[in-house]
Image 1: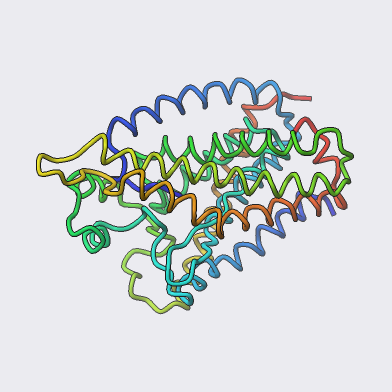
Image 2: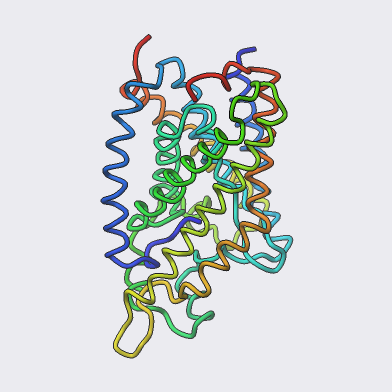
Length: 225
Length: 110
């Protein structure tokens, strides 16, 4: 889901950088008021967790690969705004140091994985867990469903951004200038592979860690998170 | 043991297991992630390299490209796995370090 350089045209790249600049500004203001200094070590672990879980590529035999992001788990524990900052840091390090995801596409990648994903996951988790007890099975299920749904929403959105490119930019001879696949291919493929395989990885990881924390450290699940 | 200490053990385990993210796709003959092909792969897929993609695809040269050292593209999987663990450790430490410092400014004292 890390869009490389060259797949999105300047209009798309610029738009998402502009959107993310305002989201980062708001996130900084909100987190400064809501995140306790005692939660910072857990947020640091959250960024590192997201970084390493994204390295664990899962194959579709003879097909493509994909991975979980961990954004929903961080959002459940520390809230979506703090998660936005943690996942942004992971994505920036991946792009700059490891060439995973483009520099020009960083705004779009952050929008998909560091904004849309933690926010949708967080609110789905909140809605399903509703007023259930912190130790309840319902919360484990809520975490799993939220992880699955949020990764798929982010993947579908990524497919949409890819698929828009042939409509926005093409050379005089009709050849694409950036991503060559249109919406009719990019959206179903991105959505399909995540619905089929990668979404389940996010679901299982998110649910299992919540289940573990219910036993070992339930206070992390009751916080403002 | 404090829960953050347990988290760090978990991160260590994930770093050691991270080469699975390299070996499993290799074993199951899975290619690149969709939409993350190099310019040559795009040429094979659609018959040409889109002009903008050709210009931008080499915009940035990462110091540890694709979680492997430069010039290691043809190394055996065992060595690539070592580079992968090394990348995981470096990435984990930098991500946690950056958020730790950033978090000191972006949090309330209580």
